[in-house]
Picture 1 (tube, rainbow, N blue to C red):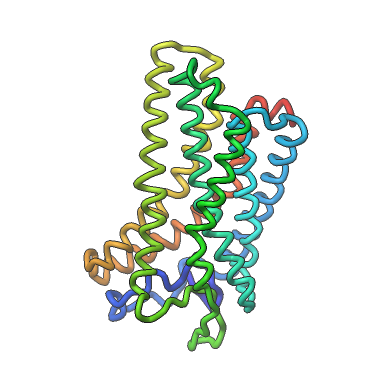
Picture 2: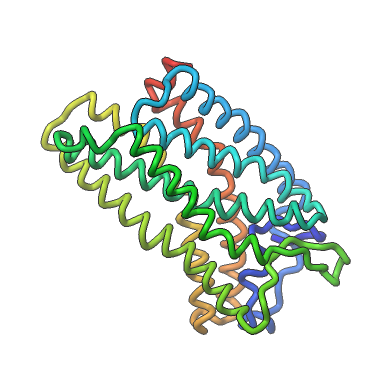
Length: 307
């Protein structure tokens, strides 16, 4: 999604491998610069207002009493940080420090958001499937420890990408673009490492855990219908569903790009199709940071009353 020198892609050169070097790329962008900038600014506005409101309500009225409250607070914080980075992506500031900031925000936001949604799923699973034995496990103290651990893990995983983030001049328009500049002798390793780390965390670890938790929850609820239990999982279930719809297409596309490294799906038609898919998958993924507050407003009964 690099058009007119503006870097709209999360990482423009991550998928620039030799397999498509001989393919004729479509010179016309799918969406214009103006449309993409407008989209980024709209998402930024909704994400800033919505997530700030969620954080304010959680701290001021609901207070932090359970692990679920801590998870919701940290997820809103992750989305807020992500939203703040969007104007930087849209206007492609030619400053190395901002390039590293953008990279750090995206990487940490991606991993922390994925892990917090997974933690919320596990919390609901333990609360409903193992209701009796979960009373001592789901404390505020443990929720804080789990949250700190998630932020630490996210920062550690993201650190290499931030380290190698650099401004590289595009010879076509003489403008710098923020993209990773890996050592030549280990370039393929670092490209593979980023792809696999995203896929392993999101597709092969967190997604199966979410599916397992909610299958078990639905089984338990089907045997003992309880309106209070239904309300208890409605918000978290909606958050997980929206997260899956927004981020799974992106991660599946990353997985397809990874297959190309192994010389699978190397035809020009496949390369162009995957590149086009990635353009839309990125837009869907980035829009996620402003959707959770909308879910809170419609599905969170306690949140609506507090607001």
